[in-house]
Length: 130
Image 1: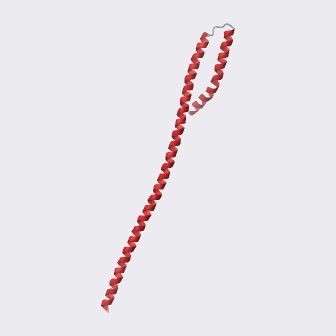
Image 2: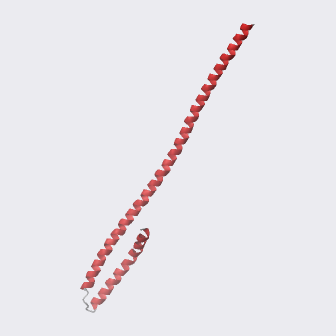
Image 3: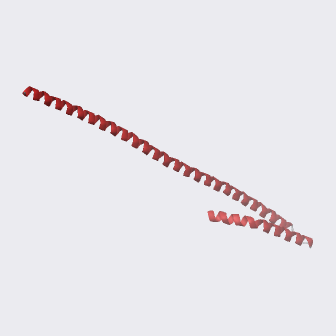
């Protein structure tokens, strides 16, 4: 498909030269009195076909530009999505670290309280034994 469009772009530049040569040839034949009406009709039809082709080429250029813009937008969306995912990962890591820290501190304090109660009960038993 792309190769065809490239070929059409190359042909587009050489078409104008061929049209000029056809017009010059028709005028030259007319100067010598030849009936060129059928050639003029064929030239008009050919020019109409060429104009249709040029419209197709222009439409193809517009579509290609649209594809390029869409590809750039998709690339930007992918980059933004990846960055957002990375940011969520960092935020989630921090939240998990805070939760684990709170659990560790709570567990340590609870353990310390249990140990303190155990130590105090041991001291009470010690005094009772005396």
